[in-house]
Every structure is written in structure tokens, then in C-alpha cells.
Image 1 (tube, rainbow, N blue to C red):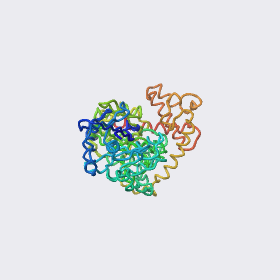
Image 2: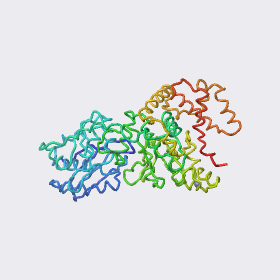
Image 3: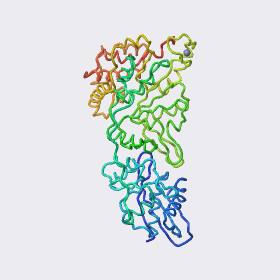
Image 4: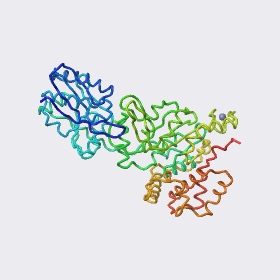
Length: 511
Ligand SMILES: [Zn+2]
């Protein structure tokens, strides 16, 4: 036999596509020709595969070897094809029987010594294989646990090419994937640790219940980061589809936790304001890595000290926040990753960042306005809730009565509110109130009683409130009402919503 075929999977963005690795051996000069749109890493595969085969004690076929990756039109990145190439080549040379590879997807990078190394993105690759009916995969031992997350697929692991060769010849077993670790208890920061800050806690709860973006404005020490970090703890667990997406993104980024199980908690990402664009939106050569925006998909993106973000960064965030996905321009076409995030934006009220109550702040009202104005255009436009936080005085800390509510308690109310919203908007396909377009809320049957919105309409007429601001308050009113278990918002809910919207943040000391 001088021809063989082994199955593999390539990734485009988050979705996997079956790749057939063909090897053809013919008389001629002993060279290896790789075809099928390989990128640089794939060319390097030629040298890795050769060294790995020889160092695994297998004879290198001294013939003209053509390796072709199909379909040719699919862009292929990375080193995950190594093992399949080695198998196709050895089978084509007659060193291995072909039958054991039929209907089996083989994934893995080869070291020069013949070791099989982990590759990024094994979970979405195996998921793609399963979707087209493939039930057996062979993966690197280090990726085996994440592969077992996909139902209906038998996963076998290898640590070396030598082991795989022995198995195919019937001379030894493959490895079993490590058994899944026990489900970790719900851990992480808890709202019970946050003393006082009633307005901040309430804002966070409303944000969680309605899926609203939120900004927290306050001096250092007011607890902005403490609150932001606790938003995931009150969000519901990810459903199956979302969990698979989030886990796949972490797999592609190479940051999946060692236990390799399905990620069920909404992720939290807090890129520093000086982070590079690639770190924020994704990039890098070969298989583009998802950035913080995509790693926060279905979870929380926390931007601290938002006015310090570079203009280029603010611009780069605008489109993904609108569309829920990041499109990365690549040499060969584009890579796309999902990025549906809930934004928490934090800022000091002024550039000198002196603690509140402190008389050291010498910033003029104009400087303060300009400081917060830096984020006003692209980001603040999308923010429904604006909360101003003040540091707790020692006296307040001492008098705060009893322990604060725990995340679990708040999460229960959030879950009930979300269920109500989901049921209401199910026919239109919206999951949370934040997704509902303004016009929908101004039309029957969702239009509120005129007397409940009279103050808002007056604000609109007098120019104190924009049309978009009006819609945001309506959205928030629905969430406040959902949290209290009402069918529809009352005038009081509208007033609470207006407070959450105004936040005083941008007027304080500004005039
Ligand atoms: Zn200042």
C-alpha cells in the first residue's frame, strides 16, 4: 500500500471542521511535500514528524512523500495535525495496518523525541467530530479530560507516537483519560463579604437579573473591584450550549483549568487598562488566541479605571459590544470568536483619585467632567446602570447590622427574575430585559400607564433625558419589577429605575 488516509479536525474560530490527512508515497527523490493551505507551523510539522518517527524507532520511508490536507479551502493552523500526518505516512508506507484508523479522529502535536503533546482547542475539535457522527477519538493525554466532556465519544489518550504504533499493531493498550475530578464546590468571592454599599449591591443585583451593563464610579477604596468580582457569583450557571462555548474558548486559549471539566460558572475577566489590543480582543500568529473579550463570553468583562483606556482600545471594544462577537483579520481570511459579555466599568471620579471626603483633590469641575467624558461616547452609551459609590466610614462599618446577604441568596432572586423575563420575551427570542429594543417597551401591551411615566416624559420634553435614556429606564423598571415578583412595573419601579440610571455620577461636583 502506498496511500493512506487519517482523520483529523481543524479549527476556524470556535468551530471545528473535519480534515482528511492523505499520504501518498511514490518512487522519486526522498522529499516530503505538504499541500492543502498549510501555514508556517504546518511546514514545521514536516520536520517534527520526521524526527518523531525516527526517534520512535520507525524506519523513515525513503520515497517521495506527498501529504495533502483536505479540504484544501479550509485554512489550517497549528500543530494539532502532526500525529495524524505521522499515522498517515507510516500507514501509507505499509508500516501500519489501515483498519484501526477507520472512522477515528487523531489529534496531537509531536515532539522531536516522539512524545505526543497537548494542543489547544481539543474540546471544540472533538465536539465537531461528534456532530458528524464520529464516535472514537485519540487525543494527547494532557487533553484527554476535556475531550471526555463531549457526550457519545469514546476517548483514548496517547503520550507518545511509540505507544500509538504499538496499539495499532496490537502490541499494547492506549491510555484511559483521567477520571473526572469531583465537581468543585461553588467557590469564589461572595457578596457576604461586602459590608454596607446597599446601592452598589442593589445595582449589581439588578444588573445580574436584567443582563444590564453597569458602571461603578467612586474613589479608591469604595469597593468597586470587590463588587465587580462578585457579579458572576449571582449569575445563573451556564446552560449546556453556553458551557460548551465557554469551555471551548478556554481550550483554544490554552487556559482551561487542569480538571478539564465543562466550565459551568460564568467567567470573569479583568484586563488591565494598559493591556495590549491582542490581549483584549485576541490575536497572535497561527491559531489566533481569544482575548479577554471572548474569554469573558457569557460572563463578566470588568474594565477598571476605564478613563485610562487608550482610544484605540475603546474603539476596538465598540464593535464587539454591539455584535457580541470579535472578528480578527488574519493573513488568510478572518477568525471569529463569540464575545457576548456583561460589562462592568469602573472609574475614579477624577484623575487625582484621592479618597472621598479628602480635601486633597484639587481637580476643577472641568477636569472632572473631561475625565469621565473620556468613556462617555463608546462605552457609557451602552451602560444601563450608573452607580456612585462612597467609601464607608469606620462608624458605618461598625454600625452595619448583621452579616450581609450571601451570593446564594441574591442568586436565587436573580434566577427567579430572569425566569420571569425569559418567559415574557420568549416569543421574541430575548433572554433578558437588557436585550429588548426600546420601541417594544413603548408599544402596547408593554407600554406602562401614562401616570407612571409622566415624570420621565417631562424630562424628555425638557431635554433632561434622551430618548435612549428613556428606553433604558423602561428596561430597568421591568427588571426591578421582575425582582419584586410583579407582573409589570409600577410608578415606584420607574422611579427606582431612574435612580439606577442617573447615578448622580456625572453631575456630582461638576457644576
Ligand atoms: Zn481630583
